[in-house]
Image: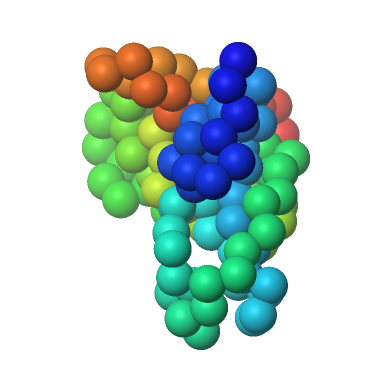
Amino acid sequence: MTVHTDDPAGIFQDGLARGELRYQRCRWCDDRSARVRLLCATCGGTDFAWECSSGQGRIYRIPDPAGAAEAGRTVVIELEEGFRMNARLAAVPAHRLWAGAPVCLDVAAADGGALRPVFRPVAA
């Protein structure tokens, strides 16, 4: 497996290939984000450290609860490390989804073959 040490998107994909959610932490202001970026959205810094999330979090927001059980539903997840990200949910019965429901990381292949993080609810 190739490790992309200078390509942020490659580093993120390499992490997913290992079942890890890697995120960037700004060394200037400590802001965290799972979105691959070249500039910090908070301070404009350019010095990032890559860290590995536990993959554990909670559903922060479900944009439209109707039909929430459909496969690939996008919600906002708040990770244990304190940052939020838009992510897809694994298909589950709607009664298992609510704001605050605990979730854990899974990895799935997108249509183009790239990997993407998917979260599935876990027993509370």
